[in-house]
Length: 142
Image 1 (spheres, helix red, strand yellow):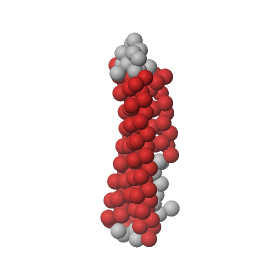
Image 2 (cartoon, helix red, strand yellow):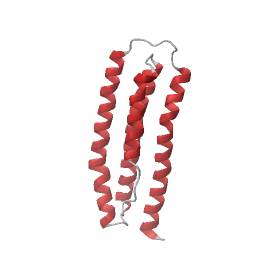
Image 3 (tube, helix red, strand yellow):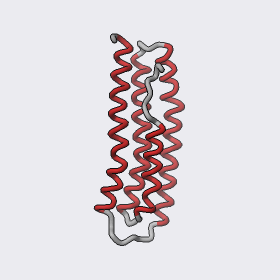
Image 4 (cartoon, one colour):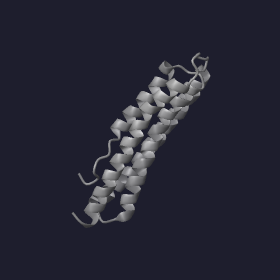
């Protein structure tokens, strides 16, 4: 394989590695939160509500990135696989999407570290993992 197809294949493989690394961080957040978070739960319902809004905003932003960056770049790569600019937008859009999903997990970690319980943090972790699984990287030409 040579030329643009090799570039796309290389970018796709790299993106899968980045995706796996980001996906792996979410369970690590859960473990870190359990080992370093306070033993006595505090009343952090107000913080949980704020973090839910932050997580929801991250999800909306991720959807906008997918719609306005990733999808157009995928379509451009289907039509012109040799276009390096489209490949760059596709990779950057995917990485930004992964980071926004990861921020949902970070919200769970912050909640746990500031006195929330595992039960309060768990929905953030589960949502982050679920979103990342939905964003499993696919080759743009298939």
